[in-house]
Image 1 (tube, rainbow, N blue to C red):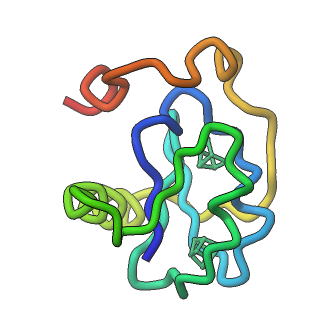
Image 2 (image 1 turned 90 degrees about the horizontal axis):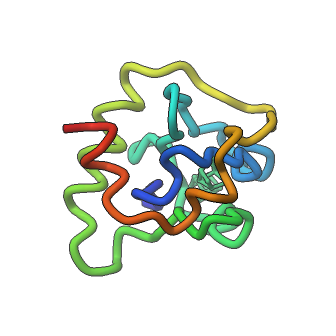
Amino acid sequence: TYVVTDNCIACKYTDCVEVCPVDCFYEGENMLVIHPDECIDCGVCEPECPADAIRPDTEPDMDEWVEFNRKYSEIWPVIVTRKDPLPEAEERDGEAGKRTKYFS
Ligand code: SF4
Ligand code: F3S
C-alpha cells in the first residue's frame, strides 16, 4: 500500500485524490489518509503530491504510518475531488514534527 505521511498535515494539497483509480483517500480537517486495504498499489498518486507526502509502505519505518492511515480512513469521509490547499500550505511544507503538533 501507499500511505500519506507527516508532510501532508497543514498543507492538504489534494492533487492526489484526482488520480486515484479506486477513490481510497479520506479527508480529515488537516490532512488526508489512504485506506491501506483499498489501495491497489498503483503508485500514480505519489508523484502528484507537491509536498512529497505520499510514500510506499516498502520504505523503512512505515508500519506506524500504515496503522495511522488505517485508523483515520475508517473514521473520516472519502474525498474524490480536488479542493484548494490549506491557507498555510506553502509556508508549512517541510515543517518538522507536524504529526506531534496535530495528533498527540
Ligand atoms: Fe490510489 Fe494508487 Fe495512490 Fe493507492 S497508490 S492511493 S490506489 S492512486
Ligand atoms: Fe496531502 Fe499531498 Fe494529497 S499534501 S492531500 S498527500 S497531494
